[in-house]
Amino acid sequence: MPLNAQKAMVDGWVSGRVAAFRAKQDAWLAGHGEYFQGLATHSAAPADGADAAPDRLDAHPEDRPHDWATFLGAPPPVVLPPAMPAAITFNVYEGPLGWGWEMVAEFLYAGVRYRKVWNTGLESWRDADWFEVAEVAP
Image (cartoon, rainbow, N blue to C red; front, side):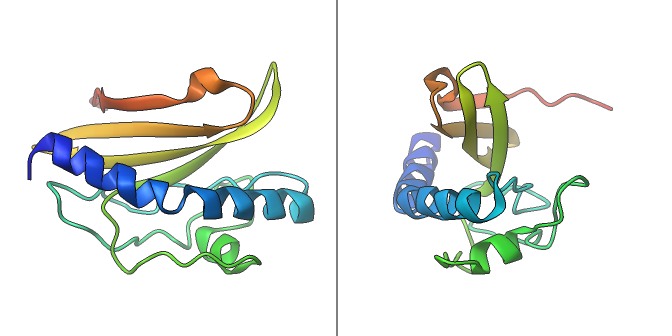
């Protein structure tokens, strides 16, 4: 599958779920006083057009007790498929214009990591179309 086809596939996958995730985050905010912060759903991002099972739904940030499984199961429920074309992360921020969150999708293509960001909040500059992520050696 060509790179542009992979990007388009992930765009379509996310676009079909973004409204549900936004509604879910609004409900979470109302019930918990903050947006849900979700670590990457996958330990290794899906690669080269192959879907991969999200294997980190029980992971949560050290400073927050809730994981993806808790978030997804809370009303209104959202169901992730058993395999996904990209890893998803939710980043929460408080910026000059207030609170918001980003949905970040990542996949690998020919060994290169690609990322796209969908912002929900007043800081529209946080939206980012697909870009290559430079890997940093430890």
